[in-house]
Image 1 (cartoon, rainbow, N blue to C red):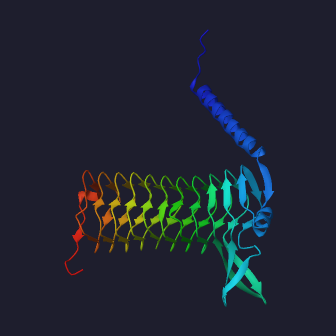
Image 2 (image 1 turned 90 degrees about the horizontal axis):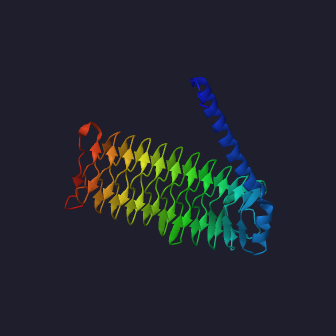
Length: 321
């Protein structure tokens, strides 16, 4: 027997199938979370106060986790405190239902004194799901920092952080809201490969050895202005939906921007490129501004496309510079 479906019946069948798939996926996610053990954020600060390592896998953390709210705090200046976290911090495949903070305030005589957090050992939030805001502004990571494969649902701030470890991993992160890493210093390398920024992202004024941001997907504006990159910049095969700022930067090593698509305008105004620059197979659909930028060598532009087919000026360094 052959059953024939008219156009309306086919639409209903497709909607029904999609609904079944959505319910199945939701049940699978809920089923995963139902097997995860729940902990209160205060349980974590208690472990730190006891000098024990923080090791959680497949856990749900309820409440706001504030690393500045621990016992070991010292006044380092008349108007600042440092909270020392000597424990190893290890979270893998965890869900954080509240805010996660790496800074805070201590009230003295009715006055709020800022507290920044200093992590002495490795800090890892691998494959974690942050449901609310994440704020590690001014935090110090004296060993490695790893936030790879994590999903940031709320506003995310890593402004003015100091990372002293050789490898700092933020690869495959997914940020639903604004992502900020302004004025931060990395004594080693920073890996943001395969990151997805669904809103604006800013790494303005970042100071780093090598920066890896290949395969990056940025739906909002991406700001890398005033960057100081002491080694290489790898920005290959990315896709940027809005404007990208690479202005007023200093790039000491190799700069690879190969096969990347810039749908908005790309600004390189007044930046200094001391190494080889490769722009091969990159599409500057919104235009490229190189006004007063200086290149020690003319960039490679094999199969590179520019807006209106106009190649911008690639000014070389003068001998007295």
